[in-house]
Amino acid sequence: QVQLVESGGGLVQAGGSLRVSCAASGRTFRTTYTMGWFRQAPGKEREFVAGIRWSYSTYYADSVKGRFTISRDNAKNSVYLQMNSLKPEDTAVYYCAAKSGLTAEYDYWGQGTQVTVSS
Image (cartoon, rainbow, N blue to C red; front, side, top):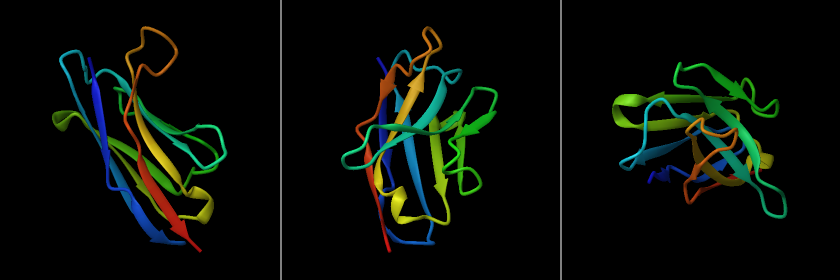
């Protein structure tokens, strides 16, 4: 099994920055997993934000490109999302996810951390 625990959410003013972290653990976790961040705003469906492969290549949703940066530290089994120039529309619960590659879907999910951007 794999456990993902997010941290670092909070309240920030528009234009500010915040970094959320995700720590992975579990017997079956592998640093070769693709890691991703998703978010879900009230009344909306969960959406993809950013992903990082084992090779450290990254990809982003158009809505956050140029503002958010995903990174990983395999020695710490951790993935991070640095969020700059935050907007009120970035307000959501942010979820960390891991993809083993056995299917096209993300296999494991964290419990989420709330990010609120005030205007």
